[in-house]
View (cartoon, rainbow, N blue to C red):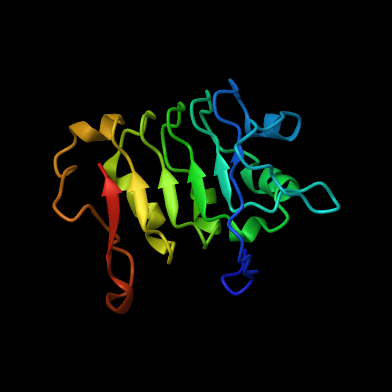
Length: 168
């Protein structure tokens, strides 16, 4: 997905909420109904959601295989995905597919099975990332997990260096 290909949607839509659905594989999202929210979801004429938020928390996902394809089937503007909640699943690593969604600003990964603190470095390429949760992962036991200022994105050029606000 191109960084330049961004369609501004001025209205904040409610999330596409697939939490607590016992989803094992991403492809199941296509046939699963999202949870109803307080506000109704708006859809395009093709049936795709106009939201920028995808909640997949409290499922049993252990990988994100076919994530790009499924998100393209669910969202009118997949490149606008700004918030993803993958908390309380069985993920053991941070899948590089997340780095293809350049507009991600919030990523919840707490309560998974991520072992290596170095996995966080993959997210350094996300220019809008502002909030990242990682607590409740085995990586908590690694030295350096609770560094002041949270997660520094080490692979960014000095002109773009910044720390991401986290709930570690």
